[in-house]
Image (cartoon, rainbow, N blue to C red):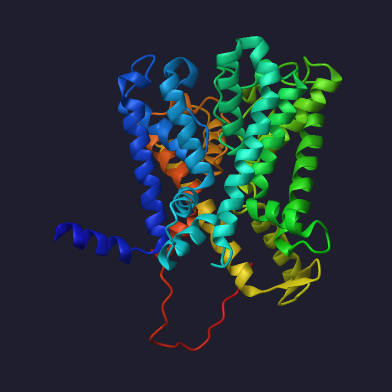
Length: 444
């Protein structure tokens, strides 16, 4: 009787709530596995295992310990699996498994899958799930082969191939976990490593809808509005970040200044791209100037694309906000781009997403700051990095108290599942029972 009632209660849960519960379940399973002695090179606390599991499932990359020296090969495999599950989505794996077994997927499961993939339409979701896994496997196989040309000569066949596979999984899923104590700083003069890993997380951050649209349309004119906005917005942010980081850090001896001109350009591009929620670093983040750090926080907050492995408020959200602001000053009710119009519904959605996101970041900074004794600049960077599921750090994560680490875990979880997804069951749409006369307020 109890089990039947529990199943009925699960069915009554709204899809976003069920999705969040599934993510929490995987995080709990990862915590248990990383707490096993077989997973630990040195003993770690339950909180450390929980923090690492949360960071892996939310594909963030923030850590309180060095993964390579703290966890055994088994532990590293657990982290890689958690990254893959969190990056590609639990429902994608579930859908693929059911299809493989020849089991049809009903409407409730399709609705959950729709929430996971960020798609408003239930049509073609299974095709999209197949596309996600196909693209992921092909891209990760290619990335592993490329990285092996650098890692195998340096670390031998067995360990070199494992390093290649792990970093490819981490890069494609925009996780930022690295098995080197200094992330990729030791390879900042190796363009094959930097550019191939950058290609992986740019590809994963574009979004699978965009990749599928490109494969099907094969023409700019036939691309959807979403794909056009993502491609233009991504290119603009990559170029903007690259140019500004190169200019601001070119003479900094602690970052780009000690490299050759060609290596400086590669490192500047890598750092511009990695802020889009990838989390790797090839230069010392803590040594970057204040202006560069602020720029990186803006890029981390924006993030990547919908239906992608990236976090943040998303590129399309930022573009719609800018277009809506422009339309306001021109006193227009609607605005158009690439021959398509957008209206109040889209504006309301992105405003809600941005407001909730800013609220989560601001409240988290406030709560952690109660017991924080370090630099507020570093703390703000860490919280924004956690919310954008980026994983870049200026060292503040290592100095957090236990309550601070738990709060960062919450921020990473919200950043992955999505503020609107969590807010879905807190503000269910309902028809008002009472209508009120219109009022007027003065703004500005």
